[in-house]
Image (spheres, rainbow, N blue to C red):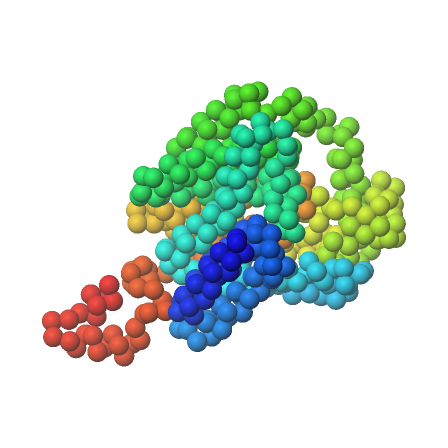
Amino acid sequence: MRDLILLAALLAAVPMIFRAPQIGILTWIWITLLNPQQEVYGFLSAFQLNLYIAILTAVAWVFSRERKTAPLNPITLFLVLFGLWASVTTYYALQRDFSYVLWDRTIKTLILALAILAIANNKARIHAIIWMVVLSLGYYGVKGGGFVLVTGGGNHVFGPQSSMIADNNNLGLALVMILPFMNYLRITSGVRWVRWALLAAIFLTMLAIVGTYSRGAIFALVVTGIAYAVRSRSGIIPLVLGGLILTSLPSIVPSNWFERMSTINSYSADSSFEGRVRAWQTSINIAKARITGGGFSSVDLNWVSQAFRTAGSSVQGRAAHSIYFQVLGDHGFIGLVLYLLILAAAWYNTSAVILAARDRPEMEWAARLARTTQVSMIGYLVGGALLSMAYYDGFIILLTMSGALLLYVKQPLGNQAKSAFVPLWRRPTEQDIGALAELPGGSADLRLR
């Protein structure tokens, strides 16, 4: 039954996608992040829904008046260069067929990112994408928080199967990443019930993060809270909620949760942390030996770990458990530099937005969103130091939005006014504007509104 409901919803979206390609982008993001086919347990679970939606969106885009290329921005450049370099490293991968799987997924994510840059050219579209990311991942936050309350925190919270957030640790970090955006939408919403719903979602998402039993996610959550207090001007309600959850933990979660968290102070004696360090050494060895690295996920292979074995490195294949060492082992030092440049470009974009929006009251929302993005980045980059989530779709989408935000803020005021009132796919041509201006008592500017 749920398969039929999902199929009906997707079929209903098809005509809207052909009318407005940005609807296709939103649907693409929804399927990529939510993985709804994994929630229906039927015939749709084996379908690559995002591929079909991507194809429909591309066809609609070709016949639309939308911009066909991503606009120039530092993050555009480095995303393209990283994608090209990742393709080279995959071609020369230690085991190409093994690396191809993650290369295929990553390239699709980069294509989605470039499409977002091309289409998110006004405030409404930027907000729509933020909403879609929050709703898609927030579903698992609300669901996980409810699970913690019902079960008393006795079981781990996991993400959807066959996804990049299936693991409890990965899910925890993804939820930490969207918390600042949940609060941004709460503050900027003009509808009271929406603000209350988002406040409840923030509370449940925090509980879900606790329920993942992920020490890295908890640490990232604390760092995000500190960064929020320093960077945000949006009030202290989320911090109050965090404090409320903290004081209520003894009555919410069992004692084994506290035993798990207590090992944070003794990471050096933790076997799992020691295994991470050994995997990091293997990644370093691969990068030193090969300019192209080993290819996607090569460090996971037993024979690769043994071939690049040195004192202190891993004996068996093991995930890098660090976004930085993951990229280093996969793509070598050149790949790591490009990845860091993507991060630097996103930070530059958000800083430039804050500077450009200064003394512009109409752009206060943009400055607030830029600060929110910085807070989210800090939490993700800290938590990602211990998790293999370098190519996570949600994170790349949010990094890309920094470029779209800066491009919008730097638009001439007239272009911003037009895009704020008229969807791009319905925007009149110059001939149409001239005809409107010639109408009795008419004004082209007024007609555009």
